[in-house]
Image (cartoon, rainbow, N blue to C red):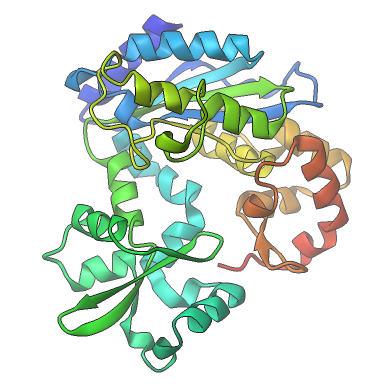
Length: 344
C-alpha cells in the first residue's frame, strides 16, 4: 500500500486538475462489528510535501507500524489533491462553523456565543460594525494576507466564545476591532493552495477514544503531546522525516475527535458519485439507525446541529466520548436534535 500512496501523492501534487486517488475503496456493505470506533485519520499537507524533501516513506512506515501496534485496522484509503479539496469545498464543510463565522461574522454566532462575546467585550455592544469574521476582515483590508492575519492571531490573546468561535481584539488604524476566527482563512489556504495533498484513512478500533487521541495521536500542540505519541515523534525526530517546522499549525496528523464528527468526515472525504455515501453507511450511523434515528436526523447530526437543551453543537458534545457513550447521550436527546435547526 505504501508505494501506491506515495505514487498517488506525486500525482496529486503535480496535477493541474482536481484529483482524488482511491487506494482502497470505501465498502458500503461493511463486514465490521458495530461495537467499535469508526475513525477518520488524516495526514495533512505538511507531511505529504515530498517535493520539498519530506520523507513520506519513513512517516508511513512509522504510522503503519503504530496503527498495527495499537490494534487499529485500516479500511478505505484515499489521496486527495488540494485542487480537489478546493473544488468540492471539503475543508469548508469539515470546519463548517469556523467557516460560516469567518465569512459572515457576528450574524452566525449562536445565542450563547453572542452572550459570551458581549460579556467579555461589553464595549462592542455599541460597536457591532467593528466586529468582523476573518474572511470579512481580509475583504475590507485587501493589503493584508491570510498569513499576515494568522501571524497577528498567533501573537494575540485568543478568547474562545463557544464551539467554533474564537475572538481577538486588535487596534487597526486607531480603532479597536474584534476579529472572529481570524486564523481560519489561512487554515483553508494551507489545504487548498496548489501542489498540496492529503491522505485520509478509514480506521477501526476498540481502544478507548481518549487513549487513541492522547496516547496514540497526541495533543494539538506537539510540544504538549505525550511522549510516545505520533505528534511527539514528529517533533522529536523532525529532521529524520525531512520536516522543518512541527508546531500547532503544522502538527501533521488529525484523528476525528468523536464518533459524530467521524461519521461526517467519512461523507466529506470518501463520498464519490459511485458510492453515494450517506451516514447510514458508517458504523455509528447504523447504530443510530437501530435506535430509531431517521435519515434526516443523521444528516442533521453531520451538519453539527446544536442540541437545544444544552445549546452545544453535537461535535463538541460528543468529543472524546467512546461510541457507546455517544450513542447513549444522543438517544436521550434525540427529540432535541430532530426538532431544532443547528445554531451557528
